[in-house]
Image (cartoon, rainbow, N blue to C red; front, side):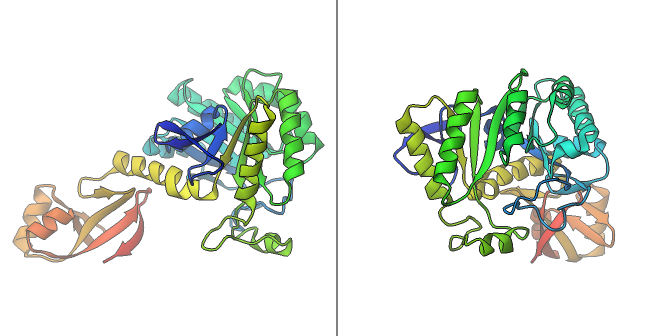
Length: 348
């Protein structure tokens, strides 16, 4: 049967998927944590030796040796701890580019986070497997890697899977669902099942700034009002139906494009907002809001500052919206993402 994730429950559905995704069998640990917004994304580098036409990485990152954590640019791996702690994450996903292009950076990141957060902290990694061999796997496993996801693009990806399966970690496949590739995906599932691959993650094909022209030139179209490609979800559901009917004992998970922004990203933002909330901020659906004073009697402002109810930040005096409203001050509301520093979205 299909299953659908709803908070902490799974429900049976009949031949369709909600925007939270669906799967057959058991979800990988990395996905379980991601669904609760408990995974941070560590972008190790934008460098990759592949040239996948559907790669969604932005031009600002592609081919550039930069590191990001949850879209925050970081200068060294120690900065990762601060962001992961602020986000209340219980694990990370290492991605890129290809993290194996910068193997020592990847190994250092795994070791650092395992040492700081403990062995229960879950770490998974994405790669095509081009650079994967026994020497690399030994380093990854000894550092503390829990789960590896191979993006199958060529024969070397299958060789990498065979190598990874010899080690005591979770091994899976993660590929986008390209429309009109049903037979290819069937072959992938059968081969993975025969090899003993633990899980197969299928991601809805997405349009992005980095791949839009490439996808359109190949005849793919975005769904109206969506970044997802037409036909990708239909094919994924068809494949799940086939897996169910075939009786194959394999874990297959389909993740829609809308899931990340609508659920995973929002949940992580909510945790970060609550964990980093300043005394004058209010938290609402993953955003923080506060009042910036335009005018207020000097005596009132002085008392607010002395009593730590208002704060001078740069050229502004800020306080909570509740305090500003109660004292009749003139103010505007600032709405921001709970990043460090705050990323202002609106002033009204």
